[in-house]
Image 1 (tube, helix red, strand yellow):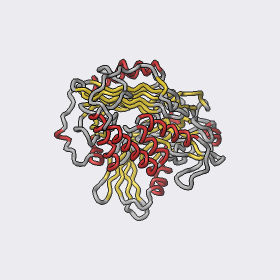
Image 2 (spheres, rainbow, N blue to C red):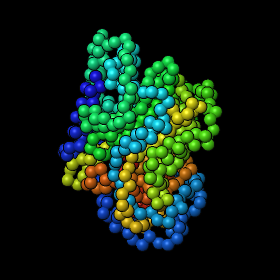
Image 3 (tube, rainbow, N blue to C red):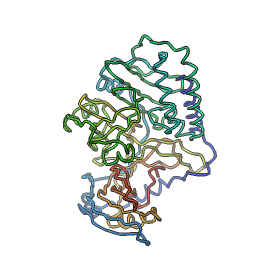
Image 4 (cartoon, rainbow, N blue to C red):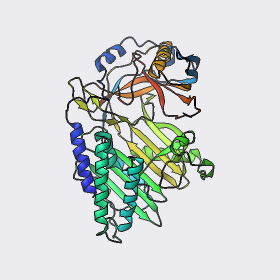
Length: 468
């Protein structure tokens, strides 16, 4: 059954990688990388970044749309790196190395895992069927990697067909499935899965352990398909590493009473120490801690649990890559009408409770390349705020809401390099974070959702879903 789905995934990736006619909707052509680089090479000025752009430490403002139905209040700290230079830097996707895979397994695994390729027992097939039927009702879930990628690249109709086929296979296999299977220990070496991917995958489902699983994978095409997932839970969560901060749980689990969820007793410093050790063992150049906060698991199958979420992002020449909750760059068209396959943004997060590290998600590691410019000429802070005030109103025309901006941040973002598959540029951008409250009193306070992203070099608006 797993090989049937793996073949479907391989076929999907091959189709996505090919040059095809431009789809009619949802695709935009990339902005000129050459023009941006040329503009960045103008005189960058002297002094610190804050001095060069004349930025304050705090900024207050208020403005509204013409109808007055959209109001924006800015009461924000202005976060600027202490770096003296912000060159444009080339990046590419890279694989997870065997050394890094060894480090993950040494740092994370609490028990002996077994190969998931062994025949499924009747109980395991029953669990898989329950999850698949749940997907039919609730939609795709990231933990079902093969089907989720089919959904991402081929759309809902193809995903629904693949899901029905998966259910048919499971139901067919149930009658011949054994009651028990002698476990085969996991291999710590990457193996070819037969679809072009190289993976290490293991699981332990037992009364003593509950559920522990890891999947480390390098997928074909070399554009951001490398990933590592780890979960240790009371029961099978299918590597569903989904967590949300308290202020956003109402959107994902409105019926959950967080006062009834046991708090963690492990301290923030202790959680950071565990995760810092794991990151150090991975040997990722420039990977530094971005945020630490309490987060709650979002799983319809298991009880909600509280963990420390410890998130990391790259720092390059003293400037971090700003983390946002935008996961993927969708299809993008080259100048000759071909399209580039989606490319996830690099992301690394750990989840810690009193038992230790119980979750980890690492997506799309980058290889940091050469600097394309020695430094970048940046717009003044006043010019950036002029762009924000004008374009936020334009982009949200017709929205009835009160918006509060409480964080304005200068950092790097990976944008696509025009007409080059799997090549990106780290460019300096401004991001604005805050809260949106609608007139019906519903709203959201996603701390990682950028309200607007502005190119710090030329003032253009960047669509993070398009990567340009």
